[in-house]
Image: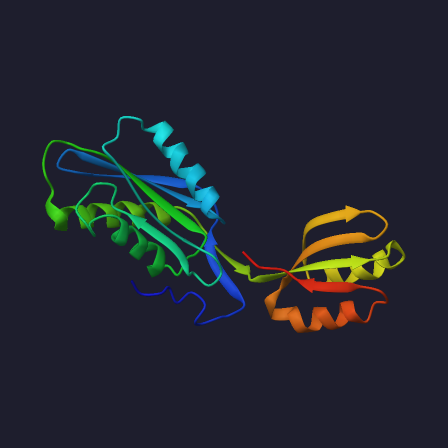
Length: 211
């Protein structure tokens, strides 16, 4: 399967959906209900899939596709018992067409008694996924690189000035003998932000793995 090219045009930003939405498509008695979720981890995917299954305990299929991560390399498709290639790949195709990541689409099918054939299934899963994704705004978000900071509380104001100026996200903080912050630094400003932190006396900086 081809790699999503969401970072090919702009290495500092990614696109994802704003909110959870749903849309319904019908064909010859079969009903397809698509749910699009913003997700940031495989764990979030599992929770969302379980949520859908609880909402539709009598559905015949729960097909899905997701792509996660700023590079788009984490993805998965599932036909969930439908003919191979008839559900998960068409769903992922709609995610990729919009160059989205951190996005999950689950399509629930209620079988209507008439076989649709592989072309019919591809059309149904593609259409329902597309309908759902059209209902939610697309967000353009900065790619962030996570760093751990450790510093004396006496330079807290200086550290906060840098964080606010460059719109860094504070992901975690602890106040002990030293202040410990985990921050998300916009990749577009990474070099400049690191220089600013290094200019502050006693600030220790360590790069962390970015999800």
